[in-house]
Length: 269
Image 1: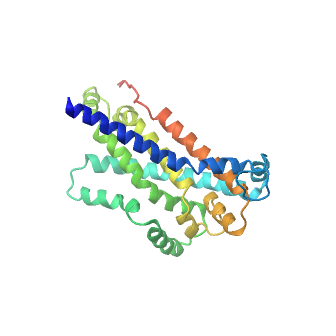
Image 2: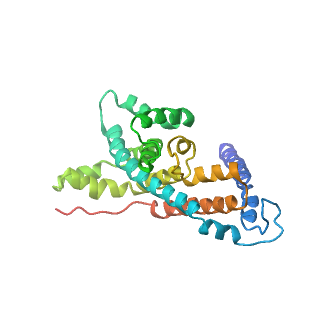
Image 3: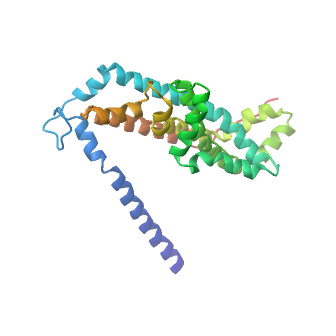
């Protein structure tokens, strides 16, 4: 009984602490949201009045829209590349019995261990030789390198919790291995796959450091926001920040919606 009470008390304290940290991280939003609706011509809090003018300015400015569309374009290709490479790699790392698998697993996690600035400098040296500086698809490849560990970690976790007896049962019914992977394994991994895809997209869409080195004149939205802060500061940056927050919130909501549970599949010969 005492251990149970201690655990419950510990869970309550942990919950309160986590809620306090979460609230502290959200406090800046209480400033950003009102400023994005400010009627003032510069950053002022509290705002003297409220207006949609800064959202309208964002929508009417071709440079902002171009940067946004480029970020979506880069993030989409990054997601496709990260999933196309990460899912097979996760299968190999979990299912393979080769001695060097653990070493490869550590190497795969390197992009989230090595500081981003160091990785950016290294990528700049490689991409400069390949003449990919300023190319949006080159930036997408660099972002895929950063997103790859997240895909591998999430899919590997799903595979380790997967019951391989289902694959054996499907094989016993005459299904081929490609059909087993497509109809049995991948549907069961849907939560991991959906989470990995959205996380890859968000990590690319919000990435700044690598974009500063590789994007050149083709600015992504985070780089455009950074340059805007350096050149001029007006409530437009707050409006764009709010839109980014809403996009990430929608992505997280879709992750929780479509990544919940697993599909029930049947194998037909």
